[in-house]
Image (cartoon, rainbow over all chains, first blue to last red; front, side):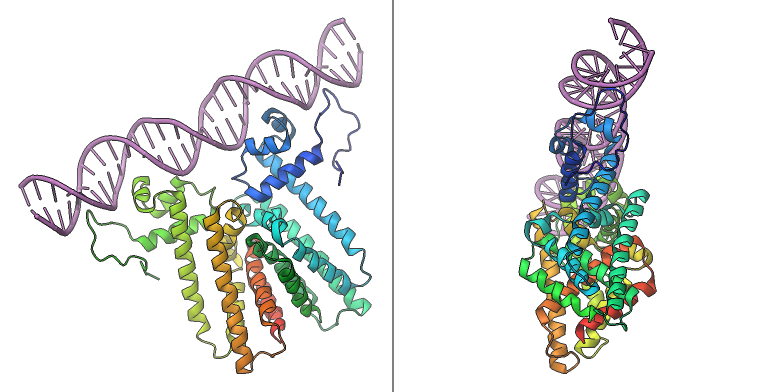
Length: 205
Length: 205
DNA sequence: TTGATTTGGAAACGATCATTTCCTAAACAA
DNA sequence: TTGTTTAGGAAATGATCGTTTCCAAATCAA
């Protein structure tokens, strides 16, 4: 998946950047996901990104800058993956089932152990870094809103009962999907997490 | 809540310890919960505990030792609180409702922002510290087992339908309660989290 | 070409980190 | 009392952290 989506400037002055921004950020977000913010040292980050400290500081300003850029990249990549998956279902219930199973799959085995950058940021940084807290809040609000819209879609296309409280159920599903990511850090199996996904669907019946 | 539960040695040699172990650990676990492991510096820990670095290193060996002791203390205190709460209900469903609401209450406002030490340890340390990973795993297994036992209790006392898959539902409730703690880091309201708790109970109907 | 601008990269920087050292104080055993 | 043991505490230690500096290289505009 390549984007470089934020760079809209066609005119660049000075020596052009030699490395691929998205590829570098993919490595950075992997290190941040695995290690967390503080345990990820500049040395480890630059080595993973294939850059020297100088280049990194030119491009991102400071360590927090790397993190925020990686956070944005992570969100972008994940959302694109989810949007693709959701398009294969044709009603609200079906899309929600795919969404819940998507998180279940992301919470298994080695992928699950790697963890979620947003969940990690919420627990490690939300209390003392206002900007990160804001971005985590926006990410969770976005995820909750998507679930809410899908529930309402299902209620209007007839795949989800109308008596369900859409708002509360959306927040519950948000908790569930993020909780899967936490439990997934302990290395759960495929079948177990998919069973959780199936049980979860009872909330929409 | 005072315990000093692990000290079974009545005979001590040398100068006796001057500080209260449980009180010191309560402060340490607060710092670790709020800051995370790496961001919690020895200076901040010792200041919060009201001790000097020398005393702390005599008592705990190293920073990880402080953390592991605080982790144990945290689990002990929380479990005692939960056990007390559960005893006020008289069937499986009632106990589970109290349990779910207990986590909902712990995920609101300032208390929720402070976060859960086990969830934080899972996301920050589980991948690179085997011992912490083990303790997190034990903690989650214990929590899941308690839920499972309560579901089976409910199924035998008639308060929970027999057709429910106890194992999968227990793991789902585990995800949900830990997920509440994650979402709670963004500062959710009392009524919202309690609504989540009510929706959650649909999994037991 | 020349000048302006930006990147790449090695080396150096000060700050802070976890930890140790060294000494004094307080308890018990002999 | 004296000796042994452990805790309290200030100061020092070495390592590592994030960051900056300095210079060469690469691009565009003039």
